Amino acid sequence: MFKKLTLAACFSTLVTGAFAADSVKVGMMTTLSGPGASLGIDIRDGFNLAMKHLNKKLGGLAAEIIVADDAQNPETAKQISERFIKKDKVDIATGIVFSNIMLAVGPAFFGAETFYISANAGPSQYAGAQCNPWFFNVAWQNDNLHEAMGKYMQDKGIKKAVLLAPNYPGGNDAISGVKLYYKGVVAEEIRTKMGQMDYAAEIAQIRADNAEALYIFLPGGMGVNFLKQYAQSGLMKKTPVFAPGFSADEDTVRGVGPAMEGVYNTSHWYREMENPVNKKFVADFQKEYGRLPTLFASQGYDAALLMDAAIKQAGGKLENKAALRKALETVKAPSTRGDYSFGPNHYPVQSYYLREVVKNADGTVGNKYVGKVADRLVDAYVSQCKMQ
Image (cartoon, rainbow, N blue to C red; front, side, top):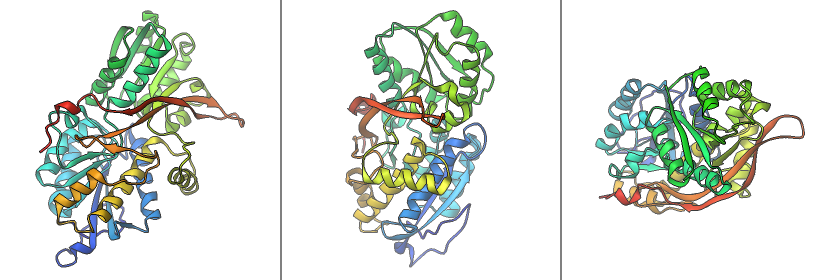
C-alpha cells in the first residue's frame, strides 16, 4: 500500500490504514557524506525544489519524503532499505548515486514490490537481463554519457586515448560505453580505487602513454582531486581531458577552478536549455541554494516530476500497482531536459549534448552548451531485457 507523506528530514513513521489512499511516502536514500556527497546533496536539493514547486504533493496526494544517508556504503544502504520497506513502508524509493549501492539494495525493493525511481544510478545489469518491472531510471543508463563522448572523440579523429575510471560497476560501464563508439587505439585502461584521492602514480602512467586524449570518469571528490593534480602536472594541454558530464559538472568546476577551462563533457541536460520547466528550475535553484545546478540536481527534480505525473495519471490509486506501473511507462512528464520516453527496459531514450568548460566574463569558469552529439540514443542492453 502507498502511504501518507509530509516533508521530513530523516526517518519517521506515519499512521496508515483508511487514509492511505490520500497520501504517499517516498524514501530518499542518497550519498550525503564522503567523497561523493556533493552528488547526493544535489539530487536531494533538486528533488526538494520540485516538492516546493508541487506544494509538497505528488499527484495531488500529501507527500512525506524520508531522507537517509547511505554514506556510499552498501551495508549501510541495505540497512536503510530494510527500514524503508519494513518500518516506514515507503511507496516509492529514489536517490541512489552509485551503481554498486543500487545493485546491493535493488533485490530488496523489487522483492517487496516497491517502485524504485532512480535519479542517477543506471547499472547495465538492470538495463539488460536483470531488468525489472519495479525499476525505472529517469536519468540515463550508465554507459550513455560515455557513449556520447566516445562518439565525439571518434568524430574528432582522436587516434590514441587513455581511459580512466574507478573499479566498480559504474566505472566498468563507463569504459564499455566509451569503447562502443570510440574505435581509436586505447593506450591504457586505468582502474582506480573508489574514494581514491592521490593520483600521482596514474598521472605518471598517463604521461608515459603519450596519448592524444584522456577520458576520465571520476565522480564527486575523486574527480576534483584528480583534475587538480592533473593540471599541476602540466599535462592538461599535452593530453587534454574529455569526460562525461558527471565528471565535469558545476560542482567539480567549483572545486577545481580555472584549470578546468577547455574540458569537453557530454550530458543529457545543459543549463541553457530553452524550455519553461528548465528555466524555472535553474532560476529557482540558484535562488534557493545560492549555487548553479548540476545535472544531478536536474535529475532529482525530474524524478519528482515523474512521480507526480504518474500518480496523477493513475488517479492517485496507489494500491493499484499495475496502473501505476503503466502510468510510469507511458506518462509524458514535464522535464528539465525536454521530451524523453522510456524504452522497454524502463531506461530513458533521449538526446545527448556536448558542453565545454569556458571562462565567463567575470573570470569564473562554467559549462557552456556546444551542440548535440546524439539524438534519441538507446542503451546497448535493451535487447537483453525480457520484461514480464
